[in-house]
Amino acid sequence: MLVKEEDAKRFFCPVVSGAQQHIVCKGGHCMAWRWASYSADTPLPDPDAIHQQFGYCGLAGVITLPPV
Image 1 (cartoon, rainbow, N blue to C red):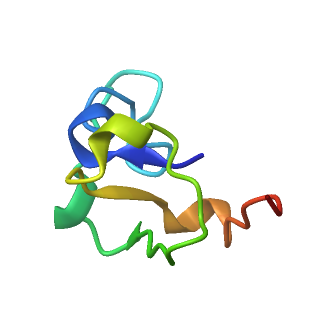
Image 2: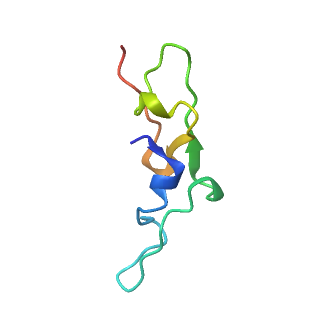
């Protein structure tokens, strides 16, 4: 799921969180974080946020967007 980096920091990290502790996502400060790259014909999840940085947790695998 593509998310803004600031929004990702509200999710729990599946790797370092356990039954007793919950660690939130570090976004771009995590080795597994992957920045999304956009071409001119790729729709953004939020078209009004063209200036925002989007990415995803690299541990989830490669994200592919559906064709437009």
